[in-house]
Length: 400
Image (cartoon, rainbow, N blue to C red):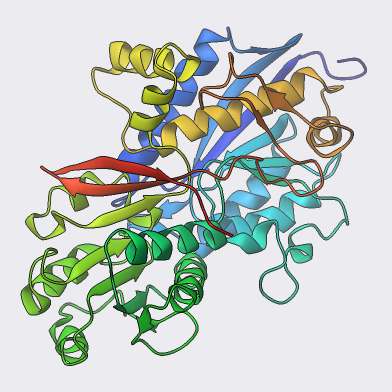
């Protein structure tokens, strides 16, 4: 860098919920990224890199918080040496941060998420989406996981074709993500010929402040569904919801339970006796599958390195996707002039940035589409909670 700046160190950050139930998985993502940066010698091309972690959760809420996301957005912009953000974990938080960093001085500023699945961040979904997230007219938000139009559809297809479900009741946590995945699941369930017993396009909302859901499940029980689908995040009192589902409707062999990736990566959920036998979807390849697909690949090697350094496996499958997002960020920085705009332009102009099959921790070649910011892979994994662990059932190819 020339001019008044003597330091060549550029900052990349993460913006994740580091309090409450989501701590384990997101702390693991930060650890994975720090290990990866260490392995790269904290360099991207000729640039030296520094790492900064932002927490978007509050202790009071025990999960991501709107006001904290808004404050973090201002801090990213104010931190002049920061050129890219890996985050967020929750789509609702991304919708607050993305338009702010899109208008950053010397920007737009690049943001690549490992976990946001709400379609509207990159695709036409709700009114004004996705344009409202790039007010400058130039996109700056990308992601390495697939989206809920695919995830919800895959879950409904699996429910009908493999689990032989004929009727379902959909509950959502009333947040951006939950309503989005609830809507995608509901739409596809109807297409598959599953009778949807819940109201609205995205199911019935559950109140996360409720201490007991017995009345809700007693009402649902009268409708005799084959399955209940939880569209939302575990942080929103998903534990109590799961306990009361089993208490009133019976265990998950009697009335099946399925949830989206918002219930993956939570040891607290996996260890509930009432969660055993619950099916989950993940908007990518589970770490198990990624290793099985390419046992000698960069992903398998990285997981072994992580275990050697930290003494345990990464928590859930999003930490490896966090590393993949950072791989794209480092490529973008290496190809740039070291400015925010330069880093963003590397991803969103020309051919964009790609990872080869050899280098990608996802175990296969991957490209971020410069026109949309979406990754070119549509991977979905179906899992089941068994013996207090998330266990891979199979990869699912979405039938369009």
